Length: 194
Ligand SMILES: [Ca+2]
Ligand SMILES: [Ca+2]
Image 1: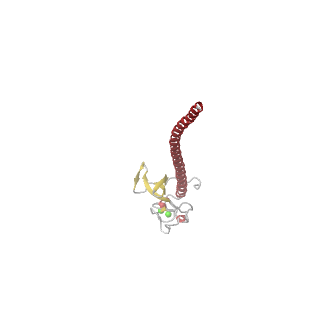
Image 2 (image 1 turned 135 degrees about the horizontal axis):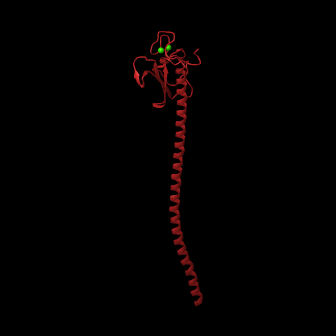
Image 3 (image 1 turned 180 degrees about the vertical axis):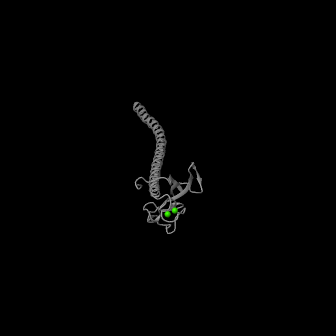
């Protein structure tokens, strides 16, 4: 009996010690696991936010690139149209700006370079005055000035045979593209000259 009790007490004491020890171990492991889990969630959250910023930044960059491409096409389209015109009015007495009978809204009646001076339209328009689709937030504007033939950096107030054509395309208030070309009185289009 004595032996049994001793063994019984001993047998009971060991598991209790192990249980106590296991409880301490699990408690420590649980606390550590919770901290680990919280850190993991935080890291994942940071990574997700960073990824969202990256995706958002990439989409914004693509949108800006597409806007610049469209602005360049609009600018080139208008510059080509202007450069196909005569250096000066071919029919009526020349005037800097539009001559009599040339409508301010329909460019298909304009026939010389300076008819375009100061012209601006938003949304951009075709020559007949109809709006170009899908370009509502863009603006095209034109400036024509005379240049000094001895120094093309300088502008002059009287015609000395050189005009600078400047086309600017804006998206909202921001200028995205500016094209500059020079048209001279002496230049002849080889495709139309004899
Ligand atoms: Ca004209
Ligand atoms: Ca004119």
